[in-house]
Length: 385
Image 1 (cartoon, rainbow, N blue to C red):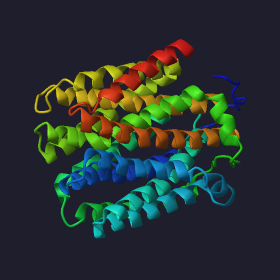
Image 2: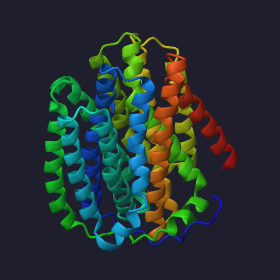
Image 3: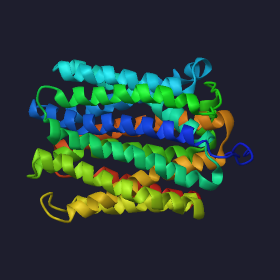
Image 4: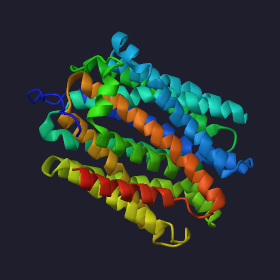
């Protein structure tokens, strides 16, 4: 780190109501994101959009995430964390209805931007709240529970595509109903929580960016990989000869690998050096996605490697979340969560856009940038730490 982190406060007892509220909120949000990424990509491709347009549409979601960071400090002054999370879910439900009733490409870009803007509240407030509520001795396991819930949502989302189909906007509408029900439930659950994250000033954000550049790098890489895989891996599958159902199932298998491994990763983060775990996850991501470049999408090896690749790249984020809570407290913890959302948005904007351009010129190269960025970041982390 380039600057000393804030002094740690004494250990607290974990507020499990806060952990449950945040985990349920992020799980439901992940259902929406897991549904919209592959479904929107497939629908745009069916309408004749190029992979560049598909990538730019995914980047609009990330632009919404990055833009909303400017509003977060004001929200922390006036609302409780639970209230902001519920509002973000309600906004996401309304936006999904918009996807269901509109076929305009311009409208879909605006809706994608608005969806990113709304759900960022869940990221920032949820992750700051989660770390504030967690005792350090179990922080890795709490981060693992959170990440497992998030990835469970990413599994359910893509599986809704073959269940509801891609016609008539039914999948979007069903997801909107689910999110609305979850928002009501969370409004009740959040009242039982006894810990709140600190207030945030806009000046705290640049302070954190100077203090924790390597943490920010971890989340940039995760956002790059996550957005690229969710938006363009389905097209990589279908262009190689796989069906749309197989493409959606591949995304689900990748996230099943994440769910299964998160409890184990959480234990590792509580018993090992967390920076070393992060480096290992980066290196594994680079190796696995490098191998996927050369495998036929209709072969058997793509399934276990997909599961392992998902486990590796979600581990980057789980590690970053645990390290954030380990090294920062108070307003800097909330600033770190805001920086994470900005970093995720930046990585997610560039990932699909650059990869879409690359694939238009070199078909089959969907995972090339993921592999090179992850491997290079692993080397940088080992060198700097």
